[in-house]
Length: 328
Image (cartoon, rainbow, N blue to C red; front, side, top):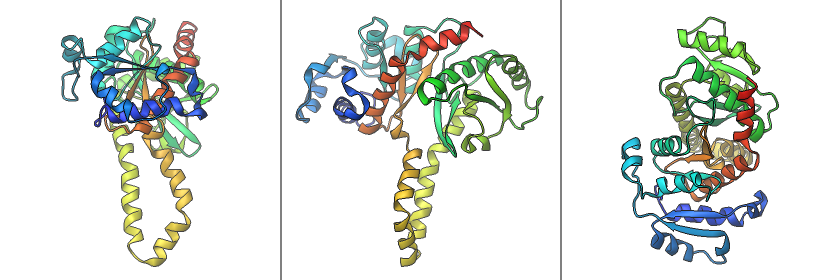
C-alpha cells in the first residue's frame, strides 16, 4: 500500500518480479500486505499469475505519508507497514520491502527488528552513477545528527554492501569534507577521520562533493543531513538534462537530427540515472533486510526493490557486516 498509486503499481511490480526470468525470479515467493479486496482486484487484472507463489495478508490500516513516523508505528499496529515488518521479525518472511512513509519504515525496522550487534545507528546507503561505475553514499537520510563512531559504522556497513552487492573488492572509502587535507572540517569530521584511518577499511582520506560523480572512491561517508541533500539534488539532474535537451531540439531541424543520432547513447546514460532501475535502498544495520522505496515508484521500481531484497538475503549481507564488525 506504499506507492502513490497503490496498490496498482505495487501489485504489477510484484507480478513482473515473479515473471522476470532474467533475475532468477524462481528463487522467491511474495507476500502482499494491505487491503485484501483491493489487492485481489489488481491481481485479477494480470493473466497467468502463479498464485502458488503469491499470498495476500489483509491489513486494515495504512500509515500515510504525512503521519509522524514513530507515533504511527506505535498506534497503527494493523497497518500494512507494521504487519509486514512483524512478518519478517517472526520469520514468515526473509525480507521486507516498502515504498511507503520512509520515516515509518526506518522506525518500524529499527524498533521491531532491532539493530545488529555492534551497530548504534542504522544507515541508508544509496548508489550514484559515476564515471567508472557507481559510488555508494551513506548516510542519505536515516540520521540527521551523527557522532564519529556512527560514521565509522556507516563505513564498515557500506563497504560490505559495496563488496557483496556491487562486486567492489576491498572498496575504497572516503569521508565527505570541505577539503582533501587531513584535519579539515568540523571536529566530528576530524575525529571520524582518525577512526577510519586506524581501521582495517581501505580508507583513502577526505573527499569532496565532486568526487561522488567522478568515482574517486567507491564509498563516500557523510551525515544523513548532508547525504539527503545530495540525494535530492541528484534526483533533479535527469529532469534538468531532459529539459535542456528538449530546448536544444526546438532550436531547429539540425539539432533534432543530432539528438536523434545520439538517442541510443542518451538512453543508456539516462537509464543509469533513473532510480527506478535500482528500485530502493537498504536500511543497513537492522537485524533483517529492509528495503526502502520512493513514494512515486512505478511497477519497474517495485520489481527492482524486490530483486534488491532477494539479493541482500541470498548474499547474506547482514552476516558479512557482523563478521566485519567483529574483526574491526
